[in-house]
Image 1 (tube, one colour):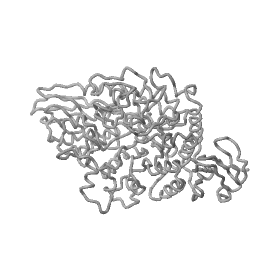
Image 2 (image 1 turned 120 degrees about the vertical axis):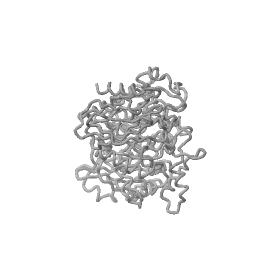
Image 3 (image 1 turned 90 degrees about the horizontal axis):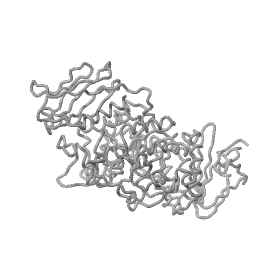
Image 4 (image 1 turned 60 degrees about the horizontal axis):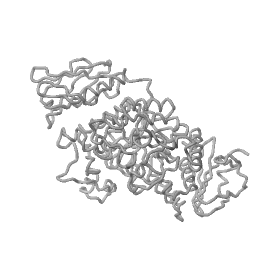
Length: 613
């Protein structure tokens, strides 16, 4: 009933409600809940001439504090307060033209679902699987095309058009992901992107409270959260506070002249993150970085406008409560106003203390990356409260280490050694590739041993490991253009001749990689030492990198040969960590019998459990 009611609310608000010569087209948020810790709520009413009217809220428990008649007469902003003892139900919002009532709408305040799992947070015990829904699995071909949307083309032979993947298709593959060892699923944005081109990727939303109908319904997204939680898995929601799509309804008819950052002519961001913290930087350069548009089709939101602040923040809280979201991945983090992000984080944490965030910080240096984190450890003027980032610095390091750089091991060693700059490096998301970066199998020249080594590193290092869909079946390609990184997962679409979701559809090489990841992921899932255990590493010698993960009850030793030739290493140097324990090879399930000398093939990584002799 709860789901059906919300769907009905949205359908009603999409229908024009006529009063006199005016029309109400929207009320957002589309509903709210009683019992929230923050009793304040700001509603947006939108319709022709609605700003000329006077609002009243006559039912006790839902008090109108203030109404804002703004520059655009088609908007009316209402500051509401929900009483601590308010009950769920319908609360009328009435609009008057002078003394004549011309409109009344029953706004829904709902009971919070106390049985619903939500806001668990994503942490170092998790293994994240990143999916572009349009390219993963098509569970409902009937929603591939939706009448009236700006992009109707569906063509799986083109990297630029939609392919038809959806939420129902993903729900059907959750058991596959659980079997692989995945504990959290991160989807690229699922909100409506009614854009004429490349709408499949999701990063130019045109709605804040609606799942793109080509992916399914809000109910489907809520079902996805429930199905993940049923399996002991988590839902990561991709949010884009910085920008929206050019066809977003508040951009098509702006409520304020400063709703967006706008310039006399189109002005793009410089993408120069260092201007944010450069002590010698020019104010003009910082403004270009923060306020320039990401691209022509993605207007930059003015996060210093308090109405924009409320609109963005409330919509994100709404999805946590509605769909049971456990954590946010924050797109293009450095382009946001950092004080806004700090306040935004506080508001979300007020409602959900265990909720977690990690921000995309695609920046060129370790100090640059550290600057955007909370804790003010590197002299930031603003404590952003951000706990983790997508760790691009270690991504660069592992790429260099496996591309036959003679000093590759030292790249890993020195990058990790800078963790003192981070308040909590275990909250960082560690990755090999994603929807924007070259597939790692291609990065390492389709060398299977290198690829296995990278996966071994990913699942034994500090932080939260993340893989990109298809990494487990050796999907490949370079970002030239990015559509090549976003091919379909074979077997997820009607008519596919091969099904890579099944062992029978995978080649021997693909199955070998799948089992390698599966074994490590499921071991990690049940091994606190690889989640929260301490890490100690040794200065590399002869381009061999050795590190240990350890806690009071277990030790793991990892040896990475980052050379193109076979190498041997003496264990004498590591006596203090090894002690009297024997080495048990985690990947081969065999006890090491090489004595004090370990032999490694070119680019081989060995993982040992230390056990009492």
